[in-house]
Length: 364
Ligand code: KG4
Ligand code: ZN
Image 1 (cartoon, rainbow, N blue to C red):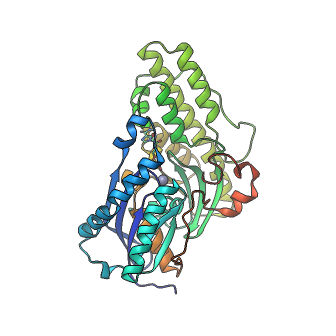
Image 2 (cartoon, rainbow, N blue to C red):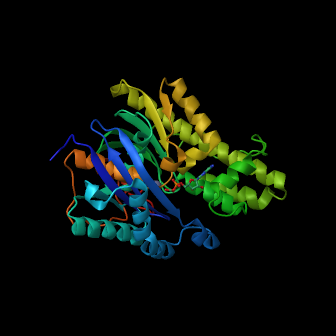
Image 3 (spheres, rainbow, N blue to C red):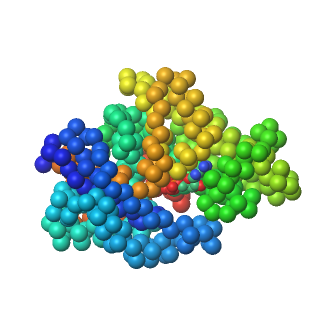
């Protein structure tokens, strides 16, 4: 049953390499109050392997999900009987990890007699802007992280329409892969940004993807291949590497801006209120942020980037999406399955054959 009472939600997030738990209160009307948000990153465990190792991630989640949850409850200063429900990420993501958090959420729901809400991780990101700012629906969202790169019209909970997605790598993945080629370690995005500051933007020319198309899809694999070739053939000094880092950063920022611009043009056809939100780890990149802010301004859109703690993976966004769902009367059965792939907008994902297959396919 829909409700307009305040809702206090526990959220659990274990879909990648962060174990997170949070307590969020949703006030009538939708305003969010974050009572606690605890994130334990596994970056150090994965660093020796140059990327996230799914089995290591799943085991690490098992080891700490209960203590992280206890910490979130303690920091919120409430007992389990004060909760209105439990929200857990049910996908998309690394399936071993997703199963850990979802099973834990189910157990809590059963033991405490609380409603369970299985949350799509992407819906968590989609609504994250509302955790710290007044971001009325609808708005246009660019979600740009290590796992995702998509443009979404967020009409409300359970009502996100996808305008475009990547047909291969996510933008953060492109940053990470080029950083690896340049010997910058993992995760490479921030290191590549630091190196790019010393680079000459005009030294190397990189290919522009999907130029002939009119849609809002992304592609970064050609850029990554071209950058790898240049790195091997022409990068011998620190200056060479800085010049390449600068070219890659600008190429990624330009593609994000071009597709965002197309999406804004489509969006204004049927929406009056113009708000553009960028979320995900890549939103930390200053060049990306500046270019997107300029693009939004040129189209008359207000620009909003949530604070970094809510841009990168966290459980506050899962708790809030769960609270929005609970407020609308949408809960899940205890038998709900964990899903490695779970497009937010299943209609668009299935209608477009380019997104059905491939490693990232429906996930991205
Ligand atoms: O949202 P996030 O923490 O995790 C998910 O992928 O869900 O995003 C992490 C991604 C990584 O690929 C990382 O390299 C990238 O965001 N990233 C950056 C920067 N900070 C993080 N990329 C470019 N410049 C940055 N400053
Ligand atoms: Zn994420």
